[in-house]
Image (tube, rainbow, N blue to C red):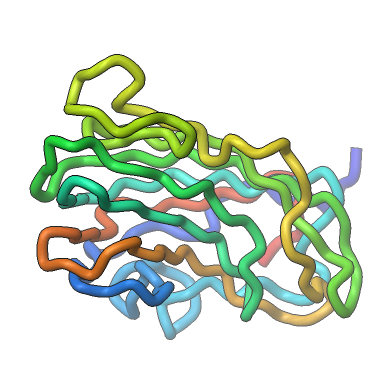
Length: 200
């Protein structure tokens, strides 16, 4: 047992996030009001925080609105790197307005180091009435196959590398497939726990 490891809460929601609509550029769902930690509202992980085999667990609640044909891509961003990226989550053809979605995501540290040597691997699930898996054909709410999706249907693998020897911010971001006032998303719950990494 490594007595230098840490288990505990890194981030918790202090206030609901901004409701975003009519965008397609990848952007943060966090604001200065949402996550506790650094004064900017984002958690800053210290140099050497990650340890191989250690995990970050994300518990995320969203309010989502969508029109038929909409897609969402979710990203765990470490510093300036998209370290863990979901599949392209489709939505049902029924459409919806500010409905609850839940994401449970486990992120394991695969490697550490400078430059781009540090990598993470994520596996999880996205649940909500409007969720359609990336590989499925979108259908109406409650149709077979609708309502939940794996975080990604791709073979589990390490994501894009980053430098774990320097301080890095931890962020949760989203990309909207279509810019529309009907396609809205708001962070309602955001909790990140660390298991086996070092104390922040």
